[in-house]
Length: 418
Ligand SMILES: *[C@@H]1O[C@H](CO)[C@@H](O)[C@H](O)[C@H]1NC(C)=O
Ligand SMILES: *[C@@H]1O[C@H](CO)[C@@H](O)[C@H](O)[C@H]1NC(C)=O
Ligand SMILES: *[C@@H]1O[C@H](CO)[C@@H](O)[C@H](O)[C@H]1NC(C)=O
Ligand SMILES: *[C@@H]1O[C@H](CO)[C@@H](O)[C@H](O)[C@H]1NC(C)=O
Image 1 (tube, protein in one colour):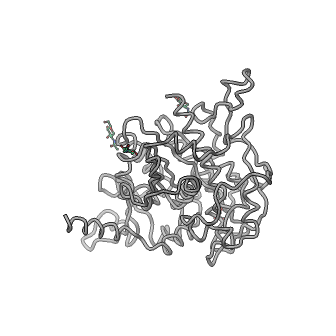
Image 2: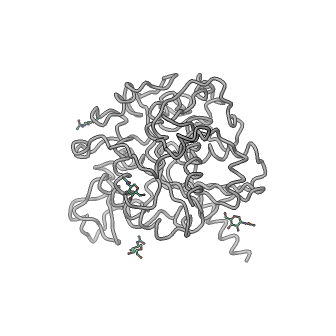
Image 3: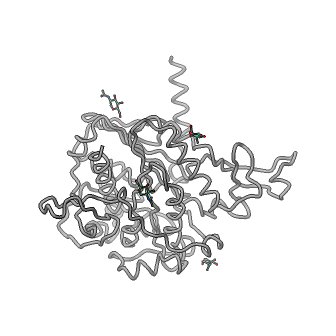
């Protein structure tokens, strides 16, 4: 027993990846585009499906009841009186995201904007009500550091009203907490590509990839989930996934020096495919795997891509995000339109892959892309504590608080239907 405990402790330790290299890697991720993927694609149609929409919340007017509104479409309204739902003392906030503590000039100002969906209102966040409604429930965030950013936001929002928590790592999670009074668990499972991957180098005895001249790279098994979340599927009642930022990351997956090499059923995919094709393969496998392995009645959401806001160059070319206010509709289109092929164009391109893979699945889509595109003011920027500006993650408290509002509203709608 003692040795088993020790063993599992060791396992836990080996799972602890040093924070700094990890986060800087994530942050150093920059995205370039495969030419062909741009040529062949156009702006994705915005989904208008009942399952993505809110019921109208204005119950006072019966004529509007039963209608629905697209919460992902709307605008940011300046609301200087909106109370912050937690503050910079929440210990779970990663230092580089704590814009109030690090003195970002608009660290508090950026909280004074409220998302107003067209045709309906987003109900105000009520942490106690949430804790009560989701008693005996376990919620897993599975994805990259942007999903961690969202996980931290929800944790801090709830911790403020219910401080008795157990910190642990449920089902292989990177971090997790149970709110003891309510038996509500939140966990974050770190995975960059969803699929399992690791370094690959040519075998002296040769092989298919070797014969094509490959020497070094990363092996990505499109049909094997990362070990960090494989157990999460049978554990959590609600799962929220993301992937995207690492798929075009030449700082790690250099297309010539260390390309992604895809494997399926243990065999290399030949001829080798580009990352945009690999992404489709991974998404298709992972969607099926999740459908097969989750608990009956589990709720599965996929979050759309979080936009970056590098202007004047990419992260490694001196790009910055100095804006102090949300962008206008015109500025958003200029920055993100696929047609313009700007620095941050991947935000909408990733979504095209997601929508394709999720079509016909039982996943719900949590569409936060467009509403986030406006918020060039809400990144850590120079306050992120790195050599370059962080225009990818979000300040906390901040934008991901609103992602959680949409998430919770979507959960409530699913719940009220069942
Ligand atoms: C919209 O929802 C219906 C029923 O839930 C589903 O059959 C259909 O495939 C969905 N459409 C899209 C574009 O996802
Ligand atoms: C706590 O919640 C989990 C689901 O997250 C459930 O499996 C378990 O039975 C609950 N424990 C108690 C004591 O109700
Ligand atoms: C999921 O289940 C179906 C039907 O049982 C099976 O054909 C398929 O191979 C499974 N896929 C995965 C990824 O487990
Ligand atoms: C898009 O922009 C990138 C980076 O500026 C450039 O390398 C690429 O050629 C452009 N692609 C197209 C189709 O214009």
